[in-house]
Length: 259
Image 1 (cartoon, rainbow, N blue to C red):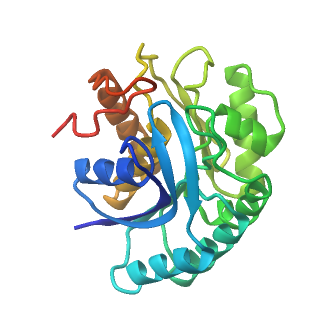
Image 2 (image 1 turned 135 degrees about the horizontal axis):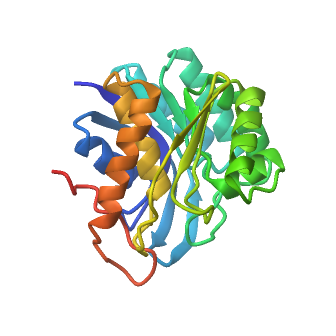
C-alpha cells in the first residue's frame, strides 16, 4: 500500500482541504495521512472563520506520522503563516520526503484570503526548491512572479520563470479564464500542455486541492510526472462533470465518481 501525507487545512463542509485530499487518496487506492494546518468554518459560499494550528503542534503531527509510517509522496495545501512553512520544511527535510506536490493556496474559491502576506516569500524560499512540482493557478502565479497573465504565452513565461527561480517543475493551471481549462507544465526546460475543455458547472469547490492530491497519489503509485498530471486531470473532469450540486454556492466535486 502506497502512502501519501497531506499537510493542509480542514474544510468543515468537506469539499476542499484535508477532507477532499483524503477522499481523493481513497479514490486512488493509496493510504492517506494528515497534518492539519488550520481549522476553517467554511461552506460552499465562503470561509467565515479560521483557527490556525500552532507551528509546534503542526510539527508534532508531521513527526507523529513520518516517524511511524514513511510516505511515498506528500501534498501541501493551505499554510497560513511563515512560521508553519519553516516547521514543515524542517520536518520534510528531516525525513527526506520525495514526490512533494505544493499547491500554494492563497485565496479560496469564494475569494477569502487563506495566506498572510509574508508567507508566500518564505514558501518560495524554503518549500518550492524541495518540491517535485508546484500547482499554482493564474492568480497565484501572478502573485508569485509579479507578471500579468492574460494568454497561453503568458502562462508559459510565468511557468518558466517560476520553475527556473525555484528549481522545480511548475504546473500552471488555466482554469481561471484563459481560453479553456488547459494547463501548462514547465519541467527542466520543457513545456508540455495538457489540453482540457471547460465544463460548465458551478461545482468547482476544492478543485485545486483535489488536483494536487490526485497528482501526489499518482506519483506515489510510481507514475511519471506527465502521466500523473494527465490522469489527475481526467479524474478532475469526471468529478466535476458528475454534478453533485450540493450547497448554495460553489458546490463540491464528486470525489467518488469512479468508485
